[in-house]
Image (cartoon, rainbow, N blue to C red):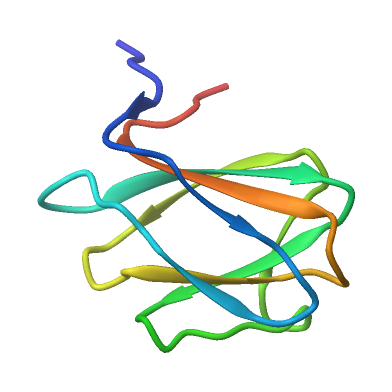
Amino acid sequence: MNNGFTPVGATVNLTVSGASQALALNTAGAGDTVYRIANLGTLVTFVTFGSSAVTTTASVGMPIPINGVVYVSLGNSVTHLAAIGSGAGSVLYVTAGAGGVYG
């Protein structure tokens, strides 16, 4: 049975700029957490996952397309994401949950 994505807790957001910024992630409890990341705006945004000290660049980050949504499953050791764009123009919305999207 396909249960899809079930949100858990509040969505957090970050206004993306041309400088790397870290965002604290909510978790869905014990075990891995699935995150729905929506990039709303006019720029591709690049993200990297890690601790509170995480940073990113366009050359190492995972691209989130303009007005795109991606799902990632991350272990409990990941507490933050870092995001960067080529300037201002996008907002990332990150929602913790369980499950995912299946085609």
